[in-house]
Amino acid sequence: TCSECGCSRYSRLAFGGTLDAVGKLEASPDLALLDWKSGNVYGETLYQLGGYTILLARGSTVDDAGKATEARLGIELTGGHHLIRFGKDNAYFGHHHWPAGSELVAAAVSGFLLMAQLYDVDRVVKKAV
Image (cartoon, rainbow, N blue to C red; front, side, top):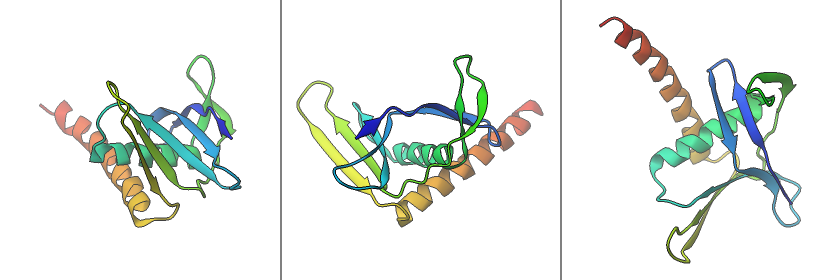
């Protein structure tokens, strides 16, 4: 089972995103993040998954006008994170899975939060010159 997740926003850090899907795989009752890529996968891709993890846990849905609603998502990804890569020009297929609570998922979330803080600091510094 797979459902579209749509847009969500986390106002405390002033960021948002559009997830590909959250779903249950096979007979598992656990929800998993499903993200597909058609290009190359880099380390930054994992930070994006960390941001999506934050959005699902702490974010809210977004209405048609792009404004955050009061509806909190509160979704815990007990099924982990799945990254599925499709080739643009060929039949290449790749799949990566990181279990919920893994060291890599925790690092991706922490890294995303640090980069969000650095972005805010950088804006302040650049305004000074």
